[in-house]
Amino acid sequence: MTLNCDPCRLRSGLVSLLAVWFLVGTACAAESDAEKPRQQRFIYNSDANHIYHYKPAPMNVADLQGYVDEVVGTGVTTFFASPNWGMPMAYPSEVTEIIGAQLAPEKLAEMRKASVTKGSSAERALANFYGFIDAGHDPFRIMIDRAREKNLEVFISYRPNEIHDVQNPDSFIVTDFWREHPEWRVGKIGDEISPLFAEIIGGSKEHRVHPIVASWFPGALNFAIPEVRAQRLAELRECCERYPIDGLDIDFQRFPIYFPQDAGAENVETMTAWMREVRAMTREVGEKRGRPLLLSARIMARPQQNLAIGLDPVTWAKEGLIDFVEVSHYLRNDFPLPIQEYRELMPAELPIYASVEVEKESDRYRRIARQLYDDGVDGLMMFNYFTRREGGVEPDFTLLNELSDPASLKPVAP
Image 1 (spheres, one colour):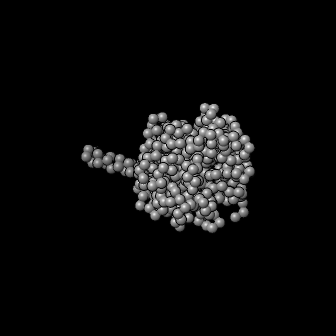
Image 2 (cartoon, one colour):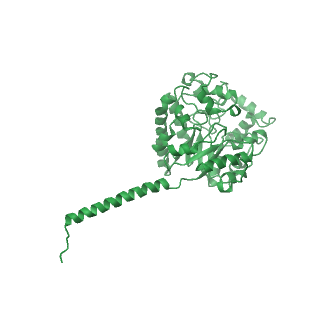
Image 3 (cartoon, one colour):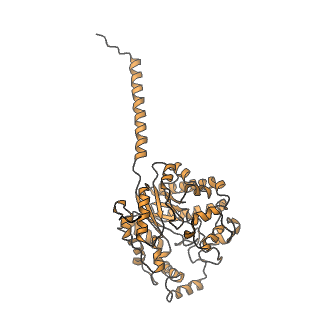
């Protein structure tokens, strides 16, 4: 009996078999990537300055650490800390101004003295902050270190176009960079805002913000100006190099204007190019320290709003420029966030989180959280949760245990 062992036919058969194995393996790998569970997070977003308003001066280190400790063990996985105190920074900066730098020494001393007799106020906040500076502390570092000590993932959440109080040119929460370049602004303070921006900051009558907020928007800096983008990148780099953080978040929703009101769509590529620079910077910093530095973005409530103001988070995600997004309203939970619409646009592996703005009632939080979890969100971010203190009411941090876990949410009436 003679076997047919034609070497050419044998090699051909092996090649075909290997090709099939390769195609099957590639398909399985692609399917595996698509089906790989996305990271779940429960994010707590903390301002840089609110913590100094609620205790008599002088605060001590334990007081400052307490604003991290109050969310430890509540389901919070990730602590976002904003370094912005208006435009200045809440730490000694070498590339921009520290809060209070605008004040003459005698004026700062006067405000600190006034804090003894005043309650929650700018005077008290500055007195507490500068108490740490005088003692040789970086108070922002104390907060970052405490969060890391408590095994929280830590991000700096940076606001690229702060415009609080710009109607007051002498305000100590605006910088010389802004004050000295009126030609670099998107318009004139007090100009009427377009329907697009009116929709973003409050789509319905009952959810509109105070009129003064709308008046600030035309005073924002114009990111079409190269010097503006360069200044913001320098500030981001300083944050990343100065602190041992896990990631950098860019809060585009605070405040959501980067170009003249009718020029957002034509500047989409400008902002995408800037995001490429930011990503290159975070990768460089991560490589130098031997640990990756994540990059995320807080974006508009509706996908089309992003493009209309010059942002393209879908392209950022597809290019690998960001690691996750937080979809967000502007301070108001005035309609269900379209998580499923974002899910269809974004890469399958990209986590999508939802920002939940401050509410007065626990059941309102529960309803919003249930809706978002049912819509497939990968986690929540609590934004401005601490602001109930402004009305003299302590936030209910035990509620976070429920909100962080869909299985723990108590049922509420529709």
